Amino acid sequence: MTVTEQLSALSSILAHRDLHSLFQPILSLSDRKILGYEALTRGPSNSSLHSPISLFAVARQAGRLSELELASRECEIGRASCRERGS
Image 1 (cartoon, rainbow, N blue to C red):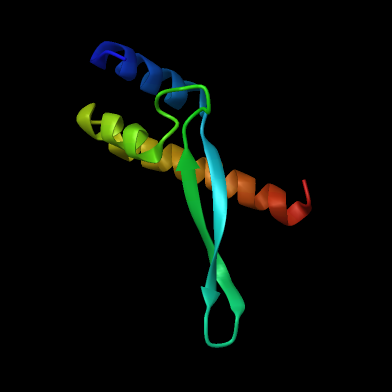
Image 2 (cartoon, rainbow, N blue to C red):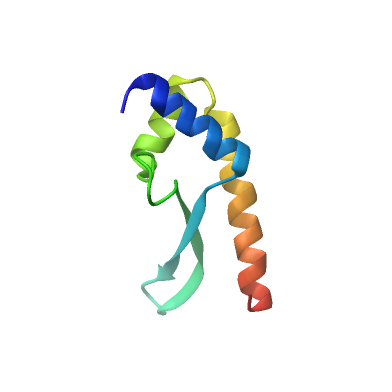
């Protein structure tokens, strides 16, 4: 994928909030309890920007890292609130 195609894909991902969040539990090893969750962001599964390494690297190179981080948080918060309601 060319740089121009990567930038175009990033713009589309950000415009449509086409991000996916996965949640990994953070555990206390001493008492085996879940302390919280770490949110992990992924791009679209059918995209070369699915990998967080690629996604965030392209955003950094494009000067859009803050925008991606904000979109990631919005997606994560939205998904977490859906999980709490059982959706």
